[in-house]
Amino acid sequence: MRYAGLALAFVSSCCFGFSGPMAKYLIAAGMAPIEAVWTRMAGAGLLLVAVLLLVRPRALRIPASRLPFLALYVVMAVAGVQTLYFVAITRLPVGIALLLEFMAPVMVVAWVRVVRRIRLARAAYAGAVVAVVGLAIVVEAWQGMRLDALGVLLGLLAGACCAGYFLMNDSFGDDIDPLGLIAWGMTGAAVVLIPFARPWDIPYEAFTRSVAPEGGLTLPVLAAYLWMVLIATVIAYILGVHAVRRLSAAVGATVASLEVIGGAVVAWGLLGETLGVFQIVGGLLVLSGALLAQTATASARPEPAPELEPVTAQG
Image 1 (cartoon, rainbow, N blue to C red):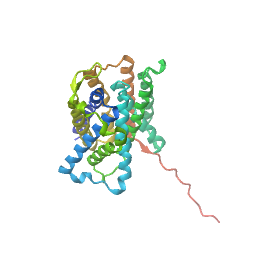
Image 2: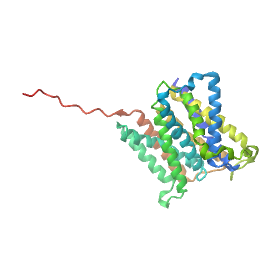
Image 3: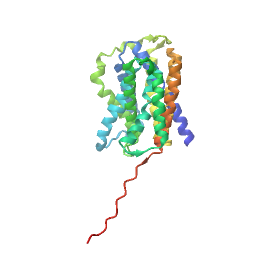
Image 4: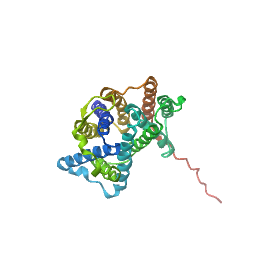
């Protein structure tokens, strides 16, 4: 069962790795990043809702008491992550944007320790330090931020929303079906983004074109979109959910970090994006630190409540 879960998590992370590179084809065809996000969320959300209505309608039931949780999940864990990441890849290579997003496990460490007041192993803090050092090398901080500063900020904000995704996945119980949560999360994100994406103004004729992002291979935009929706979204999420149910949220998140490698490889093969020596070395440190921090967080234990002094009778 465990090996099956690890295999599902690995395949899921590989599928997710296609999202950024395929999105660049939509953007190269004339869509704004927010428009590419909206078409992805709307297509994947409607497809999942339709499939669940046919094969598992009970999965779509969300208790009324959990609607505030669903709203936050929609805004932060789905719309926030995807929008910030898609904008970041217009200013940064896909591999760098993914590295910044996968600072999320380090942010989870900080939240768990400071907000939840859970005692962590020293490895969690060591992992956080290693990841931060790796990030400094990636952006070549000694050169005064060689990468686009706004792109780096957007990537880190995507990481913060991604941290919220992991934390929220730890907090919902058996009263919500994971597949239903994903389906409504994507559909809800598409609804939330309507005022910003203005779908009535999206240049849908882009789907009839074949484009080549700068330095990349030529592909039909419709093929890139369908691959992004079916493989990099629907299948990736479904496999990821089943992997976490066989393993744990912590282990699933750890394996999901392989998306950084998958995304960088796909971007190299399709888009011709390459990383420099500092980005490769720093990226390995970021991944190592994030994995160490996430693994240590998985074994965290709440701080024991202070013992009360015995009260003796007076007089």
